Image: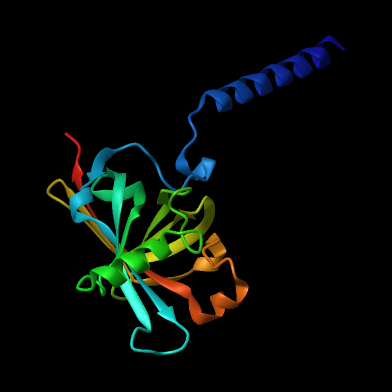
Length: 218
């Protein structure tokens, strides 16, 4: 009987040791199912040489059936480990949104920019920034782009997962990212006219391309 009790005691003691060791063991990215890491070199986005390029389209073709322009970045940083992009987040200044195709017509440019920043579209007084946070970086084996970026896009306080194909380069203390132009459904992010009938005049899809240049933080 004493032998049986000793065996039970030893079994319980061994189990406690195993559980304790498991708690003390640091989680790896595999066991924690973490796709990206913040461990590595930090690269700061060069906001003067980075931008978002956008295109919007009307449903009915006219002389001004589409507009295109840029949005500047307010801030951003990347993490690079062993020469590879690991993670990153970019914050866009929505008040910098402007139409490039109307740059020669100051009156129409001011009118369109004001409209896009109003409550009918991006409501920049209430939502002055938008952001994209990379949650996963994968190598792309074929095609014109070498990387797949998975991440969360936030516009007007609404966050949705969005995947981009991208060309990523890390070299000599500089990282560059150029995503493939991609259509985003603006209404998914609450970007729509207050009058429902007006939404039928403009396509739901807005084409976005992210262009990033970042320098290693010393």
